[in-house]
Length: 354
Image (cartoon, rainbow, N blue to C red; front, side, top):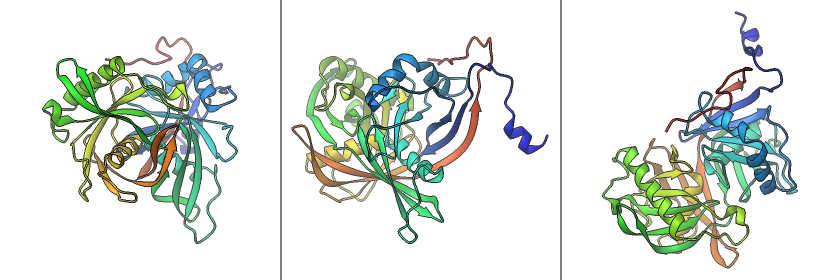
């Protein structure tokens, strides 16, 4: 078959259901499916309003993109939308197996490359070597800095976070099956419970993933039941996204510190987690383990992939002392596809196995 014909032809599909054209990437092993075309217009005067609209009216798009048979329970996605912020180059809604996130660092790192390579931002002037991409996430405006060579992205991407802060330090939570456990709650664009896996008799570097997931999920549910999450700016941001189990190495070191992030419906991040690194940096700075501009290395226990992070400057979020965090990591392209729906398919909107 002619290669051009093979690429251009779509299989038989429902003519009333536009194909979803996507570009797939990964950052540190964590997937990102970016929608190029085929998603109906997402309506709303603000990005958070658009997120509510998509949840209420277009959730079938999320399921088709994320769920089997086109995806899997740990797939992650991004729908690009118009931002109301004049400084934003693009707005984005993040998709996962349970719904819609307020922030996703691994996606921002990938979207920085994507925005430059697909012409959403102009390449930087010759000799500067770095393009600036302002990405409006549900949590706020995040700036990515993309290394550039010959007008195309190259090398790692870094981003500057929204103000990150500690909501609760040394919070005692009764975790069923484990008793009373001391955890921290920190915000890096999304709220996480953070706790050393050693408190549960687990080594985050060698324990079975299933054991880590079960433990992290138990912590998440306990915190949700016993502690009220509040964000000073918006009720839309006031929810616990997940739990990060760490190796307990919060004191500054040039050696990597390892963690695993379990979020949404027991979804496991393959990367060190960009918003999770942001939250961990905020916590380490809050506790005096880290100074401004001290870079730490964060490793994923799932894949061994690495991000770096450092607190760039102090900031405020409501009455909370906060920091702007810089996170750096490498994203890669993995392919492109047109996802279709055939008329009469009883599983057209996807499914998940538990």
